[in-house]
Length: 202
Length: 334
Image (cartoon, rainbow over all chains, first blue to last red; front, side, top):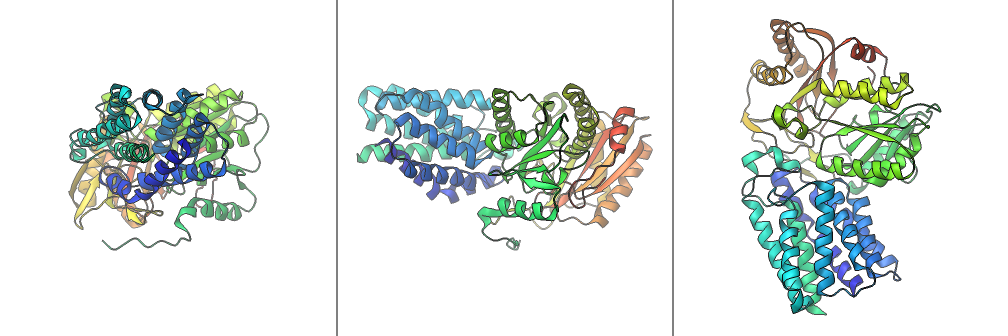
């Protein structure tokens, strides 16, 4: 089940390469989409290749593939999200509690690695609210928690439009970054949408 | 603007194929790291302080073109405009390490910082000492009080030459680092873009500029810069850029500098020469002596049109390393 979910995540990112490219062209150098596609295409290949892995190992392998093949900040950040988050998944079922822990642990890993905090117009501005929402709705089960997280991430993406970037490549733009969402935040939103959709179907 | 036209095969294999071509063109001097996208010298003496540089591809001749004599021993190359992942850097580190540690230099960008930090951690786990220097010479990208946020652009070139010479002459990683850091601390650059380059994999330009516009303080990956203005004369542009650079260090009367004017991709030597004329006049008026001039195509952003001006404040030690003959790939010979 976790494998199919992760495959759905990879597919969702790959399908949206143009959306991510466009977002990054507005306030970056336009390569976020192709970087994410490289990383998640490699992750998808890994998932299909090995049917024996534990949930934790699968998340780690997604993280390792993204880190290695996406490259750049996207690879470092999204690779770290999955690798750090994977650490809490050992020996447990992917239920609402595990989902919330994954997001929280992933967020901690990302903040430590990249140094970004909420409010700087990065993917953290979608991931942090999503982690909080997942934890708050944990008792309502996986479908509710993944829906709440996806909604919170979407609101996070919207909120980045009103922020001036103070991290990443957009930080030199100053006020010119206003009105545009952060591409990394859009990626977080896509990933959580895919998880929500998978949970709702199964 | 017309759609970009590039001479490629499968765009997703751009880095791989260009590195294959490079290895062949090196006629035995350079090789690819097996299974990775690093480029290394084929003969590195035992006991040498290894010098690694790296960053995204797409800036040729930087980074792989600066692998060679009195320059870098290896370059860790990422995808176009993307920092190399930790496994690429680690593989390259292992290929060049000769027992005296690794000096590493890269540009100050979030992606590069994270990936090179991770690589250094992995190297340390394998018993390899790595000391890393971030170049942050772009005065347009942050004010002096936040200088640690500045991007690394063509100042890389002088830091590479000086660090390369120091790593070749000293057998101490710490000494090589000290000298490289001094170069890094004394170099300042400003860039301007006249038209954008494009990313091979997307076929899209990295930003749009109207026919009569220029982008001052543009980033090293074609990311939009700090201010968009109307095209102005070479002299007015040079005045503007030099005012920002001189005032930043600040450079003072009596200083001696090395001057590098870099073509960012599609700008002609003729234009660089015209800019140089004005830059030399400004430096003369400021009482600043020019020890050497390096005009050329050193760090590109694909086919971006534009240029950057770099000044490095010199002392005798830095002059010594700038004087050493350095030979990388092709036209990288200075």
